[in-house]
Amino acid sequence: MLTRLEVDGFKTFENLVIDLAPFTVIVGSNAAGKSNLFDVVQLLANLATRDVAEAVKELRGEPLELFRQTAAGRGNQIRLAAEVLVDPVVRDPWGSEVKLSHTRMRYEVTLERRTIKPGIERIQVAREQLLPIMRKDDRWTELMRPSKGFRTRYLKYNRSKAWLTTEERTEGLTFSVHQDGKQGRNRPASAAEATVLYSITNAEFPHLFALREEMRYWRLLQLDPALLRKPVPATATDVLAADGSNLAAVLAQVKAETATKDRPGGVLSDILAELNSLIPGITALDADLHEASREYRIQLTMRDGLPFSSRVISDGTLRVLALLTLLHDPRHRGLICFEEPENGVHPARIKQLTQRLRDMVTYPQEFSEEDEPAPLSQLLLNSHSPVVLSALIDKEFSPRHGYILFADTATVSDPEKKEQRRKTRLRPVRARPQISLFDKDDVPQGFVSDWEVRNMLETVSTEG
Image (cartoon, rainbow, N blue to C red; front, side, top):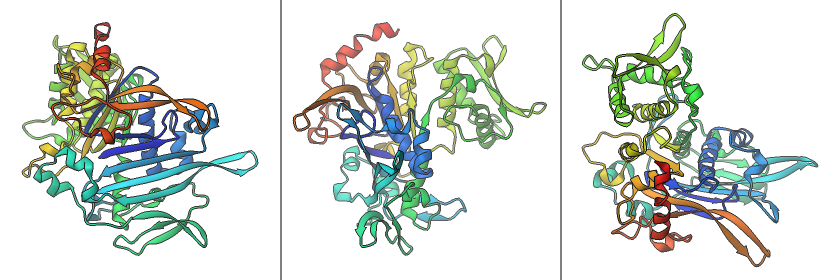
């Protein structure tokens, strides 16, 4: 679970610091930088599983455009920090299982543009470290008010030394992996084209591997209705792709994995019930392998009894179906970033949708000692719709579901450099009766005023 992000030098971000709850919604107008935050999450996830060149290639824009551009020119560094709560048990690809002694971590990484030869530039890792967050310093956990069961199951604080540091040595700048059940190791840091985290592929260093696994499951969904409609080859993966192109295969796998004698469709009946509550008129849902073509296909039946394939289902229905499928998949874990959940859903049902999404994440304060251990799950949504905002707050403009951040742009005046710069702000809506998830000192950019919330809500009629 991602609990805090610090970003400097990436696209429109300058010294950004935000805290995240299990269910966080970012609202703001187009071009305010909401999607850029998702790109940060995607970049961190990519750096854990790819080399730097591949990690930046998958993001929107050219690699050079990821670095902050101001009137003074293009920046040379991107500095990122992520504070994370990892699952207390980690399994490697060979089935080895290790219990962690510490689950609260702070990961820091700096990317730098470097000239290798005249006219040839590379993006390399300049600095990387992984530090334990100690119980006495863990403000996020304390303010989330976790239950006794959650503390016992997920919160471990038994490490005081770093797992990974970047150090100046006689032989040059060095990444040092410190002892973690095994003897540590050192690696040169002068021309690193991949993170150390990327190289940790098993539980030999269990805490580094646990972080890599956590970040591997940070996913940005950019569902493409055209791909959602297509039949899926029998050889397709059964883990939902970012564009949703293998939805039929995932649905078929979920059906097979959860089917019982009494419920031959497994959780497909639950997905159907929720889909029908949001988009009425659907009476049946199925996904099977078509033997003649060896393709997975989705079929929906409407209240008039007529079946329809995914080829003729509306964009909005397919988007909601994909999201519900992912959230009902028993293998689901980690952070999902999802843009504009309101697309294709009637404004009158947005409140119901947000409530359902809110119910499907892990809440520290709601975890019972009797609950079955399950992977941590988290949702980060963004939207420009005032209808979504109205579904998230009460009459006193206080968040009723999760944590709300307003995205906008502000001008920074820098007397030393004699320049003005535009940057993205992300400010929380203040919660009542408690002041906020975080105190004012922890939110240097300030809170969103009631006037700003009211001003956005007044445009809600245009969304209807």
